[in-house]
Image (tube, helix red, strand yellow):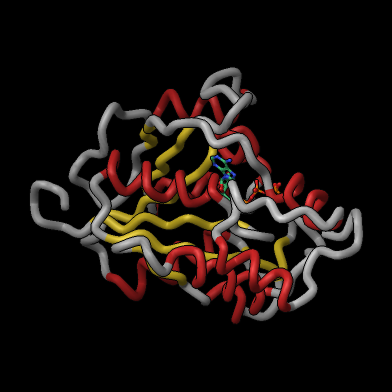
Length: 219
Ligand code: ATP
């Protein structure tokens, strides 16, 4: 909690196609470093940047629920998979802000690859009016060398620690690198591998039980 007693809620959006150890490590690191009261995984609906997907929204949500069962203070939020049409993070943030009121700090959690892309996001210039950004370095993607608009945003909003405000700052936090991506996992799963070192057992059982990711190149 912040000094004034306001809640801090972390929001981890993604396709989670499938959820893996990198996402879980990011969630754990964010909770610890940013002192979050709650962290919500928000699987995307039909993402406008990733046109098709290997698993349906309902299946991606089900896998997230299985993966986070043992993580205290972490929940799955189904609003984007239930929404009809494309998913825009800014709409989700406004919706959450309207539901939760002005006081809680909302912290959008991102891997560094996503921060590099930020200027391509719909209405990205509004994000910091509604939330903070908490960013961890993803393996091979440094927390510098950003495109000019992102660099300007970072220079303007960067703080060493999260201030006791509901929104408006960008904080970098450390995490031990976990070199895995969903794209690489889908390829391995299509080859019939069981990548138990980076996907929780119940999620692997769900993937096998539902015959997901069997065709190479499937997204
Ligand atoms: P893809 O390979 O399809 O891009 P992805 O594994 O990068 O998939 P997403 O589900 O879109 O996955 O990622 C959700 C969030 O998790 C993003 O902010 C991304 O930066 C972060 N993330 C994904 N994998 C890792 C990882 N190994 N380490 C740290 N952050 C990660």
